[in-house]
Image 1 (tube, rainbow, N blue to C red):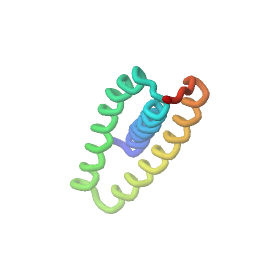
Image 2 (image 1 turned 135 degrees about the vertical axis):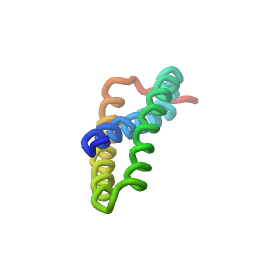
Image 3 (image 1 turned 135 degrees about the horizontal axis):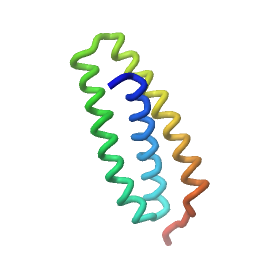
Length: 94
C-alpha cells in the first residue's frame, strides 16, 4: 500500500473510531452497530500495512508510515467530530 493510500486508510480508521466514540457517548445504538463493521475493515487494512512496513521496510519506510498515519489520523478525527456534531442529533441517557 502506498503512503498516500495508507494515509487515506488511517483517515477513515480514525474517523470511524471518533464517530464510534460519539455514537456510544450519545447512545446511538444503530449507528454504533453499523460503524463497527466499517471500523473492522479499515483496522485490518491499517494494521496490516503497519506490519508490512516494519517487516519489509527500512527506516525511510517507517518514517513515511508514521507521517502518513499522523496526518491521516489527525485530519480524520477532526473531520469526524465536526461532521457528527453537525449532522447527528445528540441525545444523552438518563
